[in-house]
Image 1 (cartoon, rainbow over the protein chains, first blue to last red):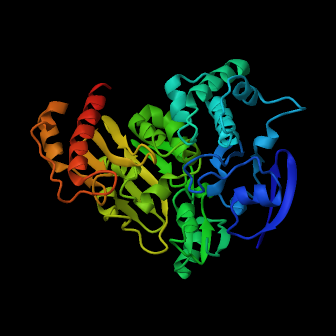
Image 2: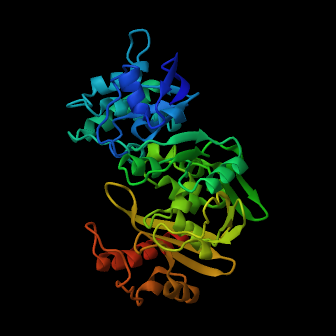
Image 3: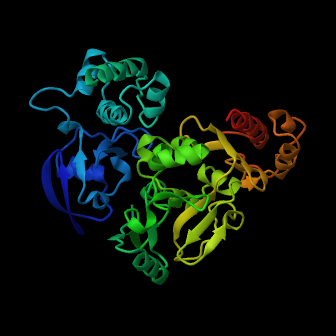
Length: 154
Length: 266
């Protein structure tokens, strides 16, 4: 067991974890943040994407101990003051989800993509979302939402 | 995952001493291969020694005509570094094609090279450019470093510190990625160096290799057509559910042609 301290969505947490605990399991099972999903558990699907120190990562492929001292943001930390984040709003407006399972990971990946590249081309959007799978194949509207969010965020 | 003890290394020498004294300990950098391996219970290390955050393993600089990258430099940093993009754009491009953005945010060049996955991208650049691998104990030429599937010249407890790439006149990388994983079904790195044309192939065989017939042909005529008459022997190449060895043999030629074309467009 190792004691870790980390900030999740602005709140500081201190926990004793088994060294082999994955970040996603800490978030879901110990902190109750079940918005971060586990899709494939093999680093392929991106459903578990969260931000660690501002970068998108797959939380099923990071140990909780590796995130000690880090700033973590999950889907629960995106809306502020009851107002959806522009990327969340764009996903709603463009109906960029069908079953919704991949959506939290998509939104975290899209937010990181737009931070690095505020006005991506179609090709850059495809390349930037290669780490996220939508099993409903709703990619057309997801790409539409990325473009709308890019406009809103300026 | 089986149980293990996690240790965060404070210095490189501490990490090297610990791994040398504990043969079942494993080094952890980005963890993009190691953690999935542990999750499948394909490895059972006693300890994970995390060297991913060591300042001694970081940094991107040009020194004496060489691009020097710290071993814990992440793929995303190589892909977006203004320095790499200026002096060795083919390497920045290659780094930007590895895995996906989330993987590139964690994975490191030292981890990729020391793992030596036969379908990894970096080994093609390291071998084609004739890079030097600087470890905690010595300097190793790329030609001596890669020793077949997941095998390298690294001894137990030896850690890659940095990689030093002699700058080529021009270079280009083209790969045919596996459509799901992004790994190279075949990737070809062509470099026009001060000592001649070098062609390295990854993904097709049991380990990265130089395609010497292509190097000779391109030395006479640096054009995609120079490769037309060459035959790639399929016998030693990989065969799996994704592609036959004959298919991979064809891909070697196709990717090499595209890489040469891309090199000429610079």
